[in-house]
Amino acid sequence: MAGDWRVDRIGAALRGENPTVLRRLTAGCAVIGDVQFLPGYSVLLVDELEGQRLSDLPRAKRPAFLSDMDRLGEAVERVCRRLDPAFLRVNLEIPGNTDPFLHAHVWPRFAWEPADVVGAPVWLHPRERWSEERSGLGPQHDALREAISDELDRLRSST
Image 1 (tube, rainbow, N blue to C red):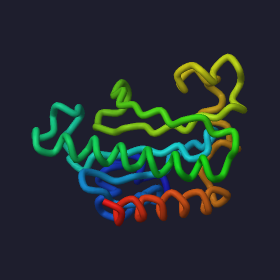
Image 2 (cartoon, rainbow, N blue to C red):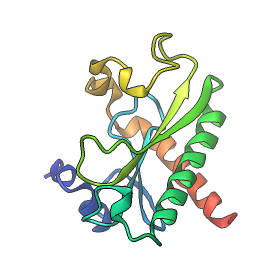
Image 3 (cartoon, rainbow, N blue to C red):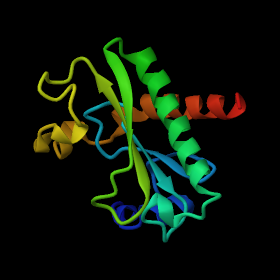
Image 4 (cartoon, one colour):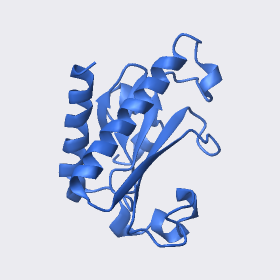
């Protein structure tokens, strides 16, 4: 079934069954977000099935996860800066309040966002933005997915 991969996002990514995967990185998988009301929104999923917090990872693996988060953030930043002159910055966060697995959010931020949220946490965007059909990930995001994946490859080869 098409929705089954959402039940086990990490396991599905590791098995090659998660269609949102952009690239496998050192300590996890870079995926494009299910919602794209901020185009380029991506997530880093840890590759440890039992890890819920950064502190759950072996100490030696923590820097690799944070480095992967930085790499994904830089890739999203480069692509969004190139594609949208209203791009402002990327917000990186590991809130861990809802999903029971370690993951990091990479949120591009834009000057065209509503004035009451552009300088606030992304979670203050209206609730309907998170579920409206036009915000959902779809074929219209294929070029964006490819651009972020290509940038991840460039950043890997430049290290």
